[in-house]
Length: 142
Ligand code: DQA
Image 1 (cartoon, helix red, strand yellow):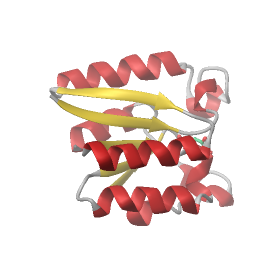
Image 2 (tube, rainbow, N blue to C red):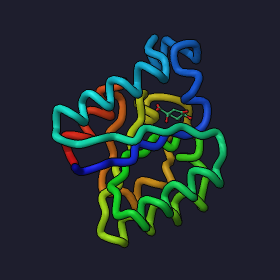
Image 3 (cartoon, rainbow, N blue to C red):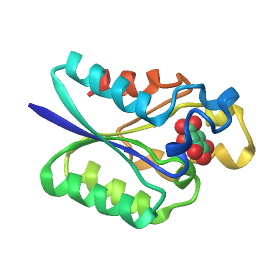
């Protein structure tokens, strides 16, 4: 079965209580079950992870390259400044694997510092602004 890594960056473990007017009321456990059931509906399995640690996220992208896994990633705040994550994401797409950048909110409608993504240029595609549906749309795209 086709397994996809669904990687989530800092503070996404606080979904539900973190700015619900921006990110909605679902918590991270609900995100995991929504993504896993959407993956099953597409005939896939999803390994859904979250970290607040940039080094751990880089290691997971290396793991994707080594295991030949496609990636859906919400890099959270790393989106806007992490060149190490960008370089690791480039390894994934240069290996011929798809990497889709997702965001729950639409960063372009928010503060200026969120308008730039250092990841997008090396991603296969970007989906933002549809709440948890952003992940479901990314699964369908894969
Ligand atoms: C986010 C948007 C980022 O700007 C922010 O830092 C996040 C979440 C989103 O899913 O909308 O943590 O990636």
